[in-house]
Each structure stands twice: as C-alpha cells, then as structure tokens.
Image (cartoon, rainbow, N blue to C red; front, side):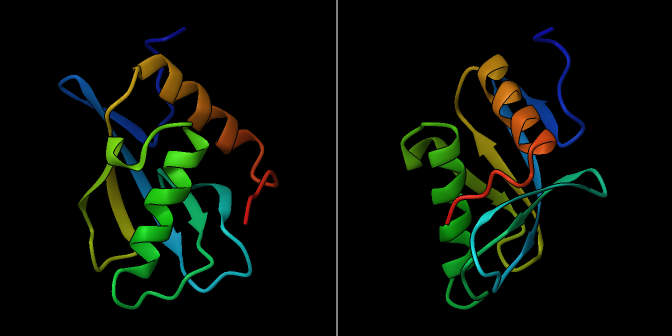
Length: 109
C-alpha cells in the first residue's frame, strides 16, 4: 500500500525525507540495510570536502532514477546521520527504498 512507508522515510509536506546512516571509505557504494531507523549506506568516498555527501546524493539520485537536483541534503552535512529530501512521487520512492532495504547486497560502485 502506498501509505505504508519504510521506517527510514518520513513525509514533510509534499516531499519525503530519508534518514541515512553513512559509512565512508567503503570499497564500493551501496545500501547495507536498516540501521537504527536509517538506511545504512556504505560510501566509496572519504568524509573530506563534502566528497561523501556528493557521493551519497549522486548514488541516491541514480537508484531513484532522478536528476541529482531532485535530492538534497537537508541535515547532517558533517555527521554520519543525515536527512535527504527527495522531490518525487512518494509511492515510487517508497518502493525503491523498500527494495534497497530488502536486498542490501545489490550494491553499485
């Protein structure tokens, strides 16, 4: 059902916010399941000069098949715990996030 959101997604008006817990300096970028209410994402980038944030946003946009301008980091610029705002159909976003949560081995790098 479209109204059922994964635990890491919250509605904020017309947009969705995705709670993300990042692990920088990984061998490759990809989802690693649910961790403390957040989508854990391993990033093949160091947490220096915004490289990890850029990698996260590019990866999420790719997974959601969206232009990068439709995903934005709204909280946690220097933290491992982040909130990303997604400007897209809520049901479509929920479906992709559910897929990422259930098949964490489907990593891309």
